[in-house]
Image (cartoon, rainbow, N blue to C red; front, side, top):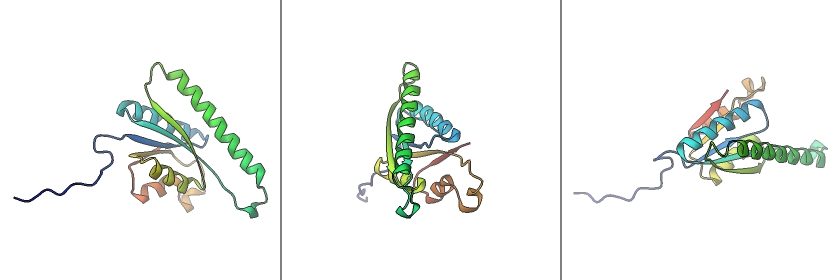
Length: 153
């Protein structure tokens, strides 16, 4: 008879407890948020809505106006999400939080998923044609292989 070794913590064994969704105001990201909200409701998981504020280098010469703009986008998204959740609160019983991270979208979502101990990540499909050559955030998250990733068209 062998002695059983204690197992390490495993995420998502009984379904996701934390679902991270990336939003940036695009139509595909808002569809991803709605899809993730449905997942969170059905799984009784926490919905962590994440906006990653882009940070440009000092050489961009835009400085404060860019920071102000991304802050306004974050505030607008938060207001839009609060309004949507208020409209469905009697129908949907979803625990949710809004988080803002700074950096490029990929690294910001990776940081968010790590810090929030995400069991799943949901993102919208890229709406940029250039991503066919460089690679989209969604593709990079899938290739990272650290969480189940759902890409919503």
